[in-house]
Length: 362
Ligand code: DP6
Picture 1: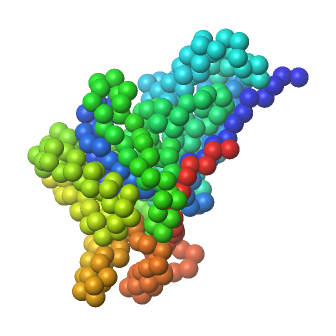
Picture 2: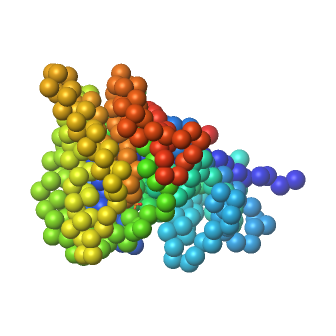
Picture 3: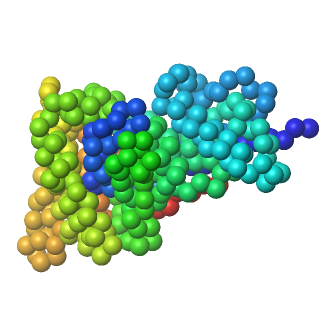
């Protein structure tokens, strides 16, 4: 009887508070600025991926939510699988006598990979981030590699830039790095979720329509045409990264909220500064901004400081960061202004909650 080599890993979605938008190298996926995100630990915002290696497999194959997805030559998917096999091969060469439990030829076997998202892929909720993170984590497990999450982030990054941040839980920075090879463009944990467990994220699904301009093509157009982007990457993001990291370490929600909202605003301003302009938010997104601004204004007036921070990615859905003590009030506020039809997902509100946490591989 032959041994079965199989491993499963899961990774959650992350939502950036300092946005990644722009590449200096499109093949290696090296960003024009560092970014920072919170990894959500919600059970229903995860990708779970099972990988199997077997000498009888004739080619690498991947199924996404049960449907086969072609692994095209030169694609990001192929790059990630090839890079993981290369890591395994390196390990085999360096440890010729070590792992008895696993075939030393496993890096030459073809792999079959099945990945599931437990949330709608089209909802604009960063499925590529959790997807590539889970893919890389499951192959690392399959290959029994002692690689750190930062090392794995170098490979997940080449699947989708934001995926490198989903290798860690909690508050995670993607350091842009400076080496042309990309060897220092990786994710590091700023603080684990337990550092600030009161931090919650409310995800408000404004629309689950597939977005008009993908992040990949949109950000490249911005790099080519926006002068505002040059100001952002040189004069704004570096100090914001420092300031928000400090705010996280000091559990300073007021500063965290101000920077998060300012960075979301600037990202959408940069999208508007692109030729032709890109609009990701819609009227409902803007109405939510107005509501949060007013809510914070009243709170500041009452001497309580900021209570909520909105942020928007490349789509109209809002993510609201807030401390646990204020979540109930915020949910009530949002539901009273934007009533939801129960059970309906599209064009109404889905509020998924909640907190941030660690990557869970098993
Ligand atoms: C707005 O990581 O999806 O969500 O690297 O081309 O796959 P590619 O782009 P992707 O871009 C994410 C953009 C963003 C901001 C962020 O997550 O930092």
